[in-house]
Length: 125
Length: 107
Image (tube, rainbow over all chains, first blue to last red):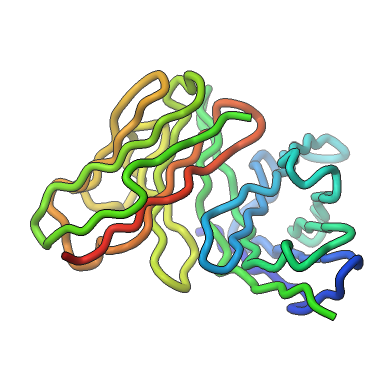
């Protein structure tokens, strides 16, 4: 049973970089879509992006264009972790950030399960 | 980007009611459609994937249907633990998107 746990600072100053790590336990980090999603207080779910890691140096990333190239997702296979960096944050980036596993089977892909418990990141000076 | 529009935004229902939530995509998504349930303070939980496949462990009162641009999530007999917010999500393109959510409240 795969489990995910987010970690990182709960408070980030405006204009700085938000950095979060997700530790994957109970399964391999290869051959899945490792995903970040956020949810602003009282709002809906906002897909940030994913990294598909297929081993060694082979990976593919996709991001929500609304983030205007501020986001970077990477994998550290040796630690079974993946990370999110979001640059130049503003108060609008205050949200609960979830890491999750995107799954696939045959020609079907893109369902998200399981999710981490989420971590609140507040952007404030 | 593919836009996902859910309706209604909220609904009031009673235990035992049959409830249907609709999700419309801005273009055909060929059944690359998932449904999630979220309770307050908790992470979302996958209910349905590929439009109509029930995730393991999810009660059979939940079902999904539809095709093309229009999809539905049906709860055949609403239970007390089903009061929550439900989201659809498309994965037809490499840029995934969620609907805005439907809150199911107690009447």
